[in-house]
Image (tube, rainbow, N blue to C red; front, side, top):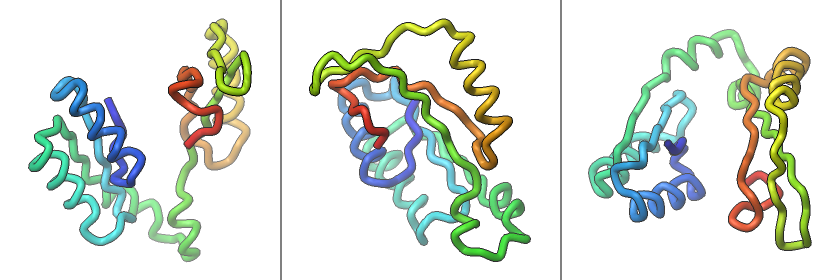
Length: 139
């Protein structure tokens, strides 16, 4: 499953995965109502119609915009909720980093504290991607 935002990064990853695994990949695109004009339609056209991707399109415009009715600051509208990424690594050398096995109690405790104590954080994810393929910085 891939969150397909419509930007260059997620679109390239989606295209590569479609070539590699075809219909096994499920792409999910959520229109939150703050997209550029025609962007969601373009995502659907390219990935569903042209690339024959297994695309799930969710129009959540009303759900998102209803929560922003009383928000006057334009930047505040774009910064609705945030995602926190937990990235635990053991650095082997400058080109290699391994993801250690953790007792699940630790990330669960971190998640509970972050979502309870940090305003605006709505989701915590634990990144299991080693370097290489991934980078240490979240992109």
